[in-house]
Structure formats: structure tokens, C-alpha cells
Length: 126
Image 1 (cartoon, rainbow, N blue to C red):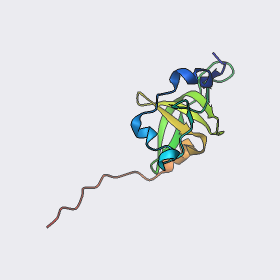
Image 2 (cartoon, rainbow, N blue to C red):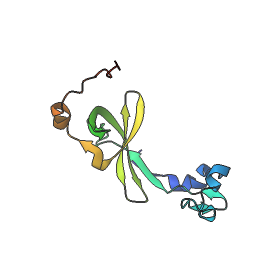
Image 3 (spheres, rainbow, N blue to C red):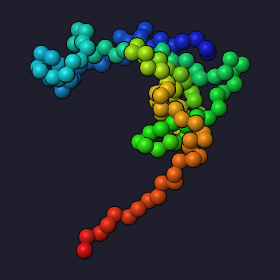
Image 4 (cartoon, rainbow, N blue to C red):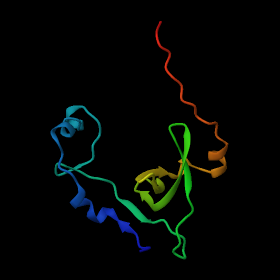
């Protein structure tokens, strides 16, 4: 279970045919730079492994920043690393999986000390 799952080996299976909209954005049409290989978009390899301690027990819950707020706790499920060197966690939070880069992780203390968000009603016109 602790072995790396290299999604690059499955890259050919998960490459998507290029749609007309994406093809119109290629450099030959003056759009953005899209890496291509035989009219297919190449996804960079991502390495994923289960997020567990060496003894097999799960990691403790984590907190992270999103949209200016610290949210959590969420249970780390996987570690990931992409070809650009970005690392992070895939976290289970409220029955969803959330991808969080390592630089967005925050402490429980920061979560507990953040100001409480209050809902406000919009001002109605006169």
C-alpha cells in the first residue's frame, strides 16, 4: 500500500482527445501554449501515495487556508507530488476530497484564533 502510484504510466489511457475549443487555443491559432502529442493533451505525471504514518496509522486532522479563511479539520488521505515539484495533500473534508498544496496548510491554533465570520445582509436601496 505504501508504494507509489505513478499516474504517468497510465497517461496514455487518461489523455483526452483535443476538443475543437481546445484546438482553437493552440499556438497555431494565436492562443495559449498547450502541450500536444498526436492531437492529444499530455497531462504531467503525478505521484500519489497513501497519507499514513510508518506504523500504518492515519495522520491527525489538518487545517488549510482557502479564500482568506482557515478551514478544517480534514483527514489526510493521500500525499501528492507533480512534475513541477508541487507537493500537497488530498484531504477528505465534509464527504468531499480536496487538494491542498503544502504552502496552504495552517495550524489548529491559527484556525481557533481566526476572527469569527459574521453574515451580513445586503443594504437595500431606499
